[in-house]
Length: 109
Image (cartoon, rainbow, N blue to C red):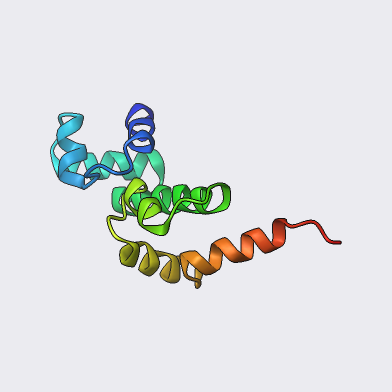
């Protein structure tokens, strides 16, 4: 599963659905989902949301990319989908997250 996890991290903007991932490693969807959850500790869909959210957070912290590009590159598709995921997981919008992070990163003075 480790090779697949690495591939997923490099292809966040691709279709990372259970059917596509199972097909990629030549397993049935049911077997794939079970083996993935046993090996990784998370259901495939939950893992995908987690790695996409982590990647989006890093891009917001480290770049000035517009939200549309962050959403697309991290596999959310649209800024609205990115926004919904941020609010559900972190309780803030992506824009507010970026501002809070940058405010905390500024030296006092």
